[in-house]
Image 1 (cartoon, helix red, strand yellow):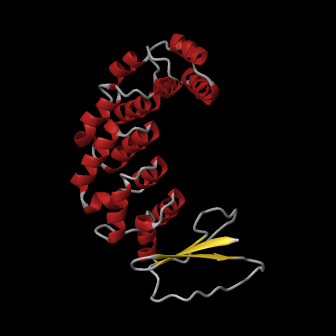
Image 2 (cartoon, one colour):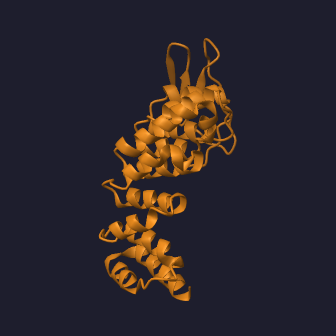
Image 3 (cartoon, helix red, strand yellow):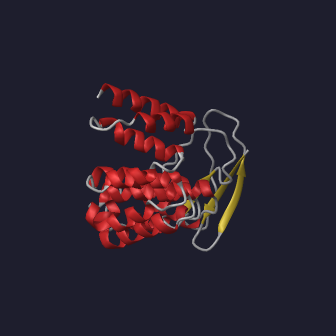
Length: 246
């Protein structure tokens, strides 16, 4: 059994079908051309599904279909090969405010086209997300998008603000940007961050110290290995090996 929602201009037809064969065709009586035919409307079927929607239909699905997976499918498709100053781009800009963090992160990972559309608006939005989004993974993804799409000069203040974030993951991401783009400021920040015990921060510092051939970092690596856990500890040990070789 599968539910099919057929979206008309001012209403939605809710249909139910039973699929018994390997290949079947279903026909519905509609008073007008549908805006969207949403197969498996309640997203209950365990399957691999391919929807041959037009981009206009995907946009409609994001804006009108009710479920998270409806919006996820639409944004995942629209974020591929969209053009700046298109209706796809407008929908994706809207999706940066989606209530589900996974959808916001999809757009953040694929926002290069939005830079070409309105770089100042996107910069303002990304800086806002790094400061105020409630989900740490979203703030971290926004930082990576800033690094990818904007010069360090224009986002420097936002990156440094992120070094005071409540999430170790976000602080580590900010430090990695500073270590790459602002090498004169990185050593002082690294010394300050050594007091933190978060695995993400210790892992980032361990990688940063890999190429240091002038200072004895053995005490730091020993402490980092004791305090970090799980795969963070593996990263620290790997970095320690590279440091020793150097």
